[in-house]
Length: 309
Length: 287
Image 1: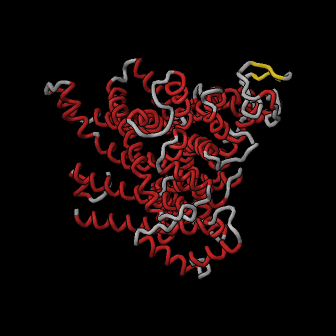
Image 2: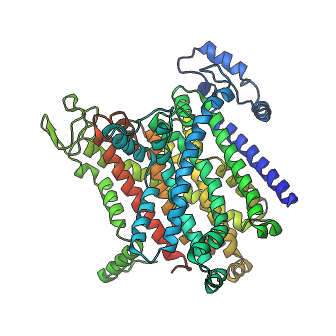
């Protein structure tokens, strides 16, 4: 168990190192990144000064070493446009994105899991096919389109909800639904196949034979054993939601990391974009690690085997 | 897989394809035809502006032009822009799927068959790419390279090849131990020959399923990048870019955001349904 965790931490660190290297070299794709880092109206002198302060006049390997060194100190650099530390900027926007991703995750879980259960248990009824169709539709809905449609119907025509911005719980409803729909569909499908998988197993039949009622069967037997796929999907979904927020936030003028990223791209504030990407990768790696550890807690079989199911 | 020449066989083949792909394949087929024959179908030039005909509602006429689906903020015919927009969506998605599919499958097969350090290098690289959320990786790369048709395709291929590589790797591992592969090797077949003649035909079905599902995703990615202004650049009509214009006119011109979105939704839905049916058809467990 401990060995497993130590090995897994090692893997996570290697992935993190790889991501930083990848981001560093993507920046160098066009050669000199100074032009990415200075604002559009910078003079030649500005560019020269920038090149020196960033150390871009030094050999590539030295630059790479410095980049990694800064990373180990959680130093993501300074925004040239705002002249503020990137970590400070990100910290001021992060709470909004976390709210949005949290809201979306709640939407996805609260609707997705019961729907999946219904899809599995009620597969003999015609209504279930309609429900399955709706799940597939939700899966194919571009977030930016469903978002705009919601703004139009509930924000503009009916006037029930504020069409954009942040500040209250009402503001959070539409963006959360727009962002959560896709994850909702994923959860419904995963829950459906997990429950179907379990339903075909012997212990369910013997529980039925013992006279266990359907309600108890579901809560005491099915759900407990269907939880592993749900955990691994949640790990994936959390990073998906954070990344998906980039577009949804733009639609709803939600002042989180996504809007920050788009603003930074427009003003060519590349250090900020890079910071957000690194944060996204860090969260992905951390969440996957947490999920792997959680499996071993939930399922003793994995603890002994030392690998994923 | 030779196509029989007699009409009867062609007909039965198409019928079989239709049975596998399902009724939603007709929507996809329709959109593909619209994209190919766009110049013949579109009632107007998609880029011709008409300042007297700005933001006209669907079905209205201005200066002799009938706006069947309304007009946009520059007085361009929305229907024509949507028809031409199908070209962008489909071609970007197709080319990026082909590019990432070929690169990913090749690398995945090489990793699974050659093992050793090739395997280590390729699969660690796959892990690293997959730990950056795809849309973020696409955004940062487009921000560096600059937007545009070719760059978007390159960026999408760069972000998505690891998914094919991972599947191809797993499939290759399970096929590589088969007696006929070992036999071919013992008879002196070179590794490219083994990969191409013996392994690829056995994993191509699994790769086709991934490619179909990826196709829908690529359509959404292209639209998403264009929505953020990082995709194909104006005045080239793109559904995603039109949607972002429509976002600004939700209070006054509902049609601008609605119709391109419907097309996007139908395209992705039909591709996803075909992918689902394909994977069900090819999966021996459910067949």
